[in-house]
Length: 126
Image 1 (cartoon, rainbow, N blue to C red):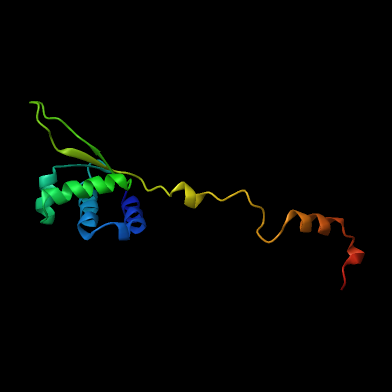
Image 2 (spheres, rainbow, N blue to C red):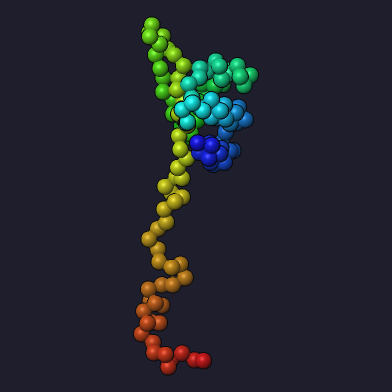
């Protein structure tokens, strides 16, 4: 899980503010009982990081849109909203970065390959 957090931070470092990065690390530090899952209220996160709860809500929304965390809401037994569960998602490289086209060797074309196969060894100059 630590590597997923580090990879997310490295990939989105300039997209995230200091408080958003702090929230990711706070969620990771509280997900020791169940690796990757954290059960905290926004007010608790805000108090620990000395930021407003609105900042926490905005940051969580942004982290969700970037694919860093997933938020699962919980409900108390007496019909009240409980603390959300934040799941730190594994880091996945975007498909555009990991797939290469079906190109052959970049410096060899099909015509050059056919010509070299059809030449005898006597045609080469030594």
